[in-house]
Amino acid sequence: MKLANFFIPHKDTHKKAHLISWEALFFYVFIFILLQVGFSVLGYVKPGILGIESSINQQKIIELTNSERAKKGMPPVKENSALDQAAKLKAENMFSENYWAHFAPSGKTPWDFIIGSGYKFTFAGENLAKNFYTSDDVVVAWMNSSTHRDNLLNSKYEDIGIAVVEGVLNGQKTTLIVQMFGTTNVVSPTAVVNVGNGDKISVKAEEFSSKPQLVASAQSPKIIPQVLIDPYQVSKGLGLGLLAVIGTLLTIDLIILRKRGVFRLASHHVAHMALMSVTAATILSGHIGEIL
Image (cartoon, rainbow, N blue to C red; front, side, top):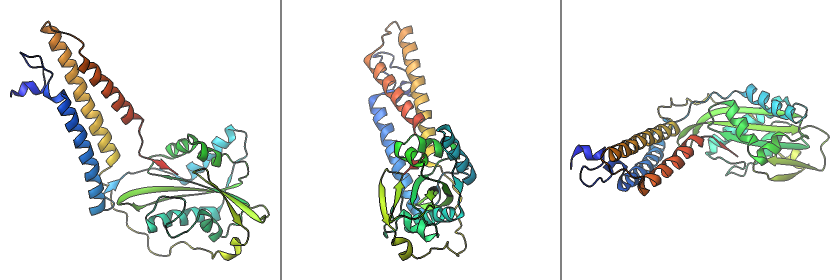
């Protein structure tokens, strides 16, 4: 097998280059699957080596939230230290119990942290996000979700608390963003909590006196390992690089076949181009961050 046949159509049969054959495409898919498995194993063996470096800012999140509320003619929410504390406690608990959800495996609820911070509410809410690169990305993601948007634009809220906490979650360095809302009107027999997935939970007033007050950990802050590999950027870079190579080889294939006088837009060219377009769109539109 000649080395040239990996890059250009076969001289006699005009068969496409080996690097853009269907066998090669299946091999590329296998490599990507292997890469994802490798990331999972590495995250387990060396926790914190994988992850992203974000620039999320607490005050910027509040500013962007109020900007979105202003667009709808709504009054701004004011930062509340008790809700800041509740958000921080929630983020720390997600790291300590290693979960990503509104409700902890141990049974802790969003309002446990709000009540535990000393905040007595009639209405409260919680939005979660993780692993976004910028504050703008976080708020845009919340606004693009109907349930999170409804929470963020809830006219009943007067106060806001934000926590941006880094730690290791499921083996990867993670930046958690917790957004808490509340209103401290006279407590009714039943208070309401809205969480980002759209659930509305009624909380009986007696829970306000039965829940113990929580305090932030007094332990020394954990040392977060220096991130060496951003799995999302590695996968994106490798994917776009591979698409560029395949696109180049397809172009060469068409040019050479035309020069040989056997030019035709074969079905495999159309199929390859369609596959490349879909793959490129998926890679470019994808993002690492998640909301809950």
